[in-house]
Length: 330
Image (cartoon, rainbow, N blue to C red; front, side):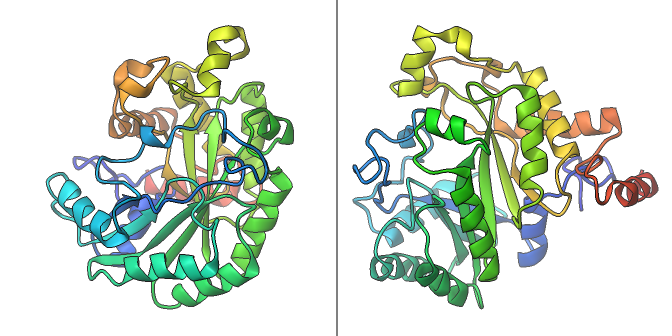
């Protein structure tokens, strides 16, 4: 694995999904966020209304994303949008991100995903969804796609604790997440999860325990997100009423928590992201001097070096081997 630091020959101290993608495709592959107009069962009344208490999809959708545009149109505008910043991209992954992107009939899903894969610059799919919005019929279709295209299904797990999931109105249990992850793995499809660090009611010790819990699951990728208080959400309303129920981590505290979390994490899990990033205008509580995600990533990578530590250092099954490998690298 190659370091982000061009002046150093040191490898990264964590298992990088970005590096994996570069190795698999022979160069940079850029994600193209798409909005195909899906909803969620805890928005449309099936399980509830209002959605998750922290969610505002407008906060993370690029300007070209709009469900009134076709998938092809969004891809074309997305390529133009990213061309200036990512000139070295050798291809793109169609990232169906907004809401629950398996929450519809298989016939409708096929039309959307086949359209995305028909674009000559699209190398594969990333599909964001909920663990209660998947079944064997859909997984059979995705397994067939993955035989010759890159396919990654990402589940919003967010927490391993059912009391937290009820509090944030997820509308599913952690057990359902486990079932969906294991079933996806059984079909031979790459599987990723999202976790939010700092949800109300969860202590740092609770969060560190989650690293051990998810390390036992057959997941390929992990996205970590700090808790962000987004304007015009129920979370923002609750925060204004009872700020004492929240511990919003400083940047230094968050970096410390991330390092300790990943020290306990199974080293085979590829880390896709350490932080979430939305435009500051959406934030009820601005944090961390509006540092960009790539700036925070550099701080995290430097902290690994400062502490002489790495992902999986305290992962029970392989910590000895990892330590020996790390010492040889450094």
